[in-house]
Length: 381
Figure 1 (tube, rainbow, N blue to C red):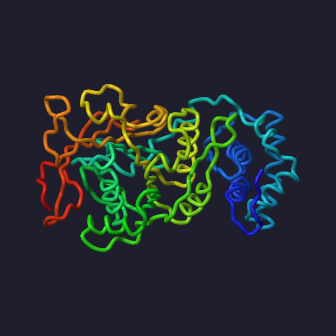
Figure 2 (cartoon, rainbow, N blue to C red):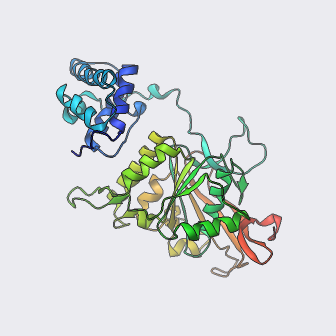
Figure 3 (tube, rainbow, N blue to C red):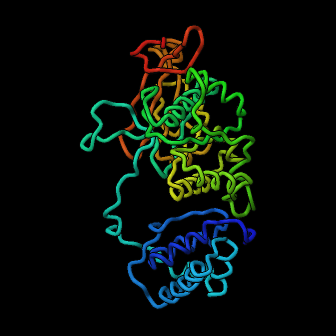
């Protein structure tokens, strides 16, 4: 198990502070995951619920409480101290695993509500009775795919700019508002700033931030385990996210953030699960930019939604929503209708209707390309 130096604040100590404050056995699951995964902070208080305390669970929880009380009393807010106190109290990942039940009653989740939307379809009359159609929700991971060079990074930058300005609509979508962190493995900060300022028509808001020279977030580990492990950039990214509290994080592209065989279902599942749980713990969301398949980009009647994302079908299955950008296709298969138009399609949404499209067209300021807008409003701005 990796331990950090004593002067580095880590989430386990914070978690134990909450255990001491709430004294709630339901938090054992979060402590168990923290011990098992070390650097990867997965799990929140509601991830594992205890319906009753048997003798083993009660004993283990008493041990955790002793360690948690020491963290609070000593103001030991470091990962090193938290691990030390748990070890001295006799708490191990194995003992926690025996204390956390496998089955929970569904009624425990009666008060659960869908996560609030971060990006949703821009429609009139959205209210409590007519809720928004989300494509990215808090604590979740969504995918946005297209073929190379079609404008997906430009569209994502436009959404990020609207969010950084406090929230607004662009390209038929609306953002809640808040800082945005862009993890770009292709374009460096100068290139992204030039593109963003061109879209904005002026200086870029400070709330739009980029991580220069990012490292892979997930890599292949022991080939026998098959699930990989956090890469060199994982801990750095999430420590930064916890300081900034962004509305969403952009990973562009998927193949660079996840440095492993993209057709490996087990690796893809582990990466997507870790992203979602860490996003939920941080109160943010993740939008992954990826490529699509040749079949999905050429055939408007293509019946397999998972084909909108290249690589393992697990990516499509694990994402809570999937957006797909492609050129419109006419009556004759493969014949473009208008090279300046795009179809932005929602091919999957777990929290609202899917299989809807927005027709976009290229927008220009003078002769300068500045992104996209809904086709009904014309192509000039």
